Image (cartoon, rainbow, N blue to C red; front, side, top):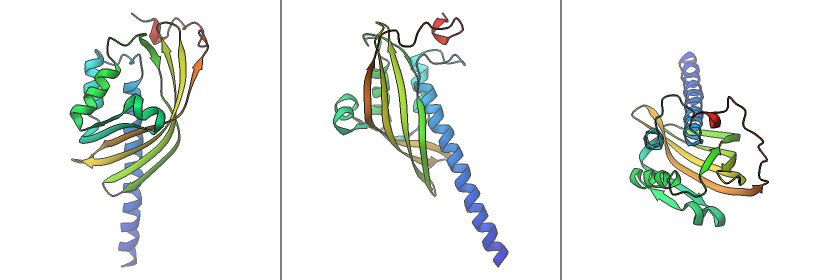
Length: 185
């Protein structure tokens, strides 16, 4: 009996560790797909990028900006169609000035697994560089929810709350190196 209990306890611990690793990879994949420019690796355009992002979400997912600053800027999208529309607007060709670079950096990770659901909290920092030379540095608190669907972890909620947005001086990033993804045709 003692051995069965010990094996069951170890099995639960391994399941939690595997879930945490899967969720960590899922969140990293989401951030990687949101980075601009999107690294090559076979992604043709923003429409395909959005399809790949949407494959990470549950059908009833929520994407929301919360707090005084992000509530008005990002709002709330409920359900796959609304979340897709959010991303289509984000990469709209009408964005002026065009966003030429953003990159997500995650820190302060906390993942809490409860069976087939989980939450994850991170702080993220993200530089944005625009075609006109302007740039901002953003930081947000992420409080996301995840759910296992057909054996795969999916994002059930993306919730972002502003920590700060700081204007950066023009040219702060310097010249892009010749091998940079920004210099490729």
